[in-house]
Length: 629
Image 1: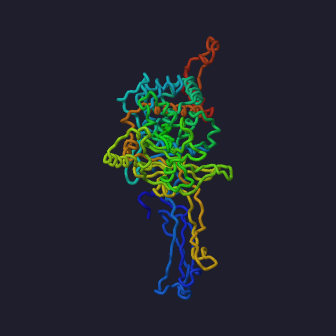
Image 2: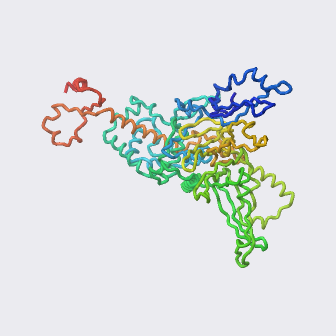
Image 3: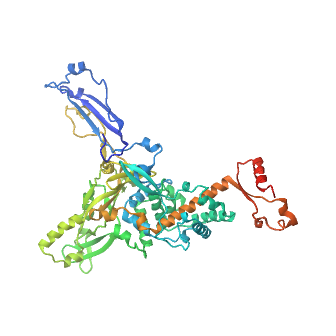
């Protein structure tokens, strides 16, 4: 029986379990059985038949003095996840979860995990949506003119006004789909679907009336647009739009180009920390001068102070800094609090390492950092990759490191040295403020990025929370996940193998050893953690009403989606159809046409035919249409 937070089609892969039928008189003669099995919604039972006969039990001393048969069973739990066989069959992530994944372009899983984590932060997503980009700047001049012509002649396709301004009173043309999740009806707006624009419809009629030169201009503009390097804000906005509305996993090649990277970079895993910093810095820069200026800082930026304080004299050196992530030691720390304790613990500068205080000479001093303020979204980067001085190589640490669904960071907030020197508070005032401070720094886990593998070969995926449900984003695939699969299963460390403890651990003196050697390290563990301030949870993670917000982005993206549909249809037409200009003998009387370039000949009779049409059928059709001439 699955738990409430398990996927509907839950399965626990490779669950190791065992049973031991205890022989109380001769423990080393106990019967031991072990196996592994994929327990699932449809297969919840597993065991053995005919392990022992009743005669064997009675004759070999398996009953204790009370006449009881003692059987012990053990199981090593794993995280429940969605059945892979379902994922491999036709499976719509959008219908099943309300989300879509991201394409992996070679080795971009690390980027996909980070992007899905950032996408789950609604306030950041809204800031990206709020950026405005002029349609003229993102498409070719000729394509823009053709789109404007289409908008004037087809009111149903009027995504953009003729003067390139946004009419906020005009409702957006949307196509909606309905899906059911957990028994509840959920509606979401899909992207502009070219299947909703049949060739016989308005778009098809419009394309029929375009000149050949328009076809060429549309395709040439497309080639030119693909050579331009877009800004990061535009590329990220387009990607977030597709994550919101697309039925299929979008790609992130445009975002990669916006970083100035080349195609070869798609096959090389970059450092996630550097990518995070690059992305946030670029977005902060591009939001300057807009209505969302400062959004990145308001969401992700905290403040800290590095200090050196002399012990024996009144002398200190302090410098305030900002941070967007906190790097935590894994080696030598068992959990997130121990790592924070180590990070904020002062280092004693003494002996040969004393501090040179200006005007005072060598002095004993404490050196360290103190956090002055944590942001609404705190990002922790776990230092799983470290340089080993013995092997002189970078290694991955798979040791156990615990993190929690909720954490309180109030212990690590301190006043700056300047504030401490001037603060004069009454004792009772400090007490009440301390209680309030504790509440102000309570955080809840929102996203976890996981690395599976070694330093030389690995894979990244992410878990993010939406409402009360957790979802696993593994490149193109999105499935529901249990809380255990998100948190406990990603601590890393050793996991036990099933073994017969009644025989394996017996030493030469007939005593049982307490040390269990039958363990192996997990190769998958958490790498990036995102926590959201509980008191601002609604502000940071609350839903966004796209239609009510009336983002300019919606019209631009839908217009570009329409343009993409037009270009796709044009390519299909060019591959499938041939356009024929029909001229009769009368057209050449006086040789007037022969004295002109053929491109200037009037379109007296134009025929578009499928390339598969045979010549006999074509001649019959031409005779029927132009036979009188």
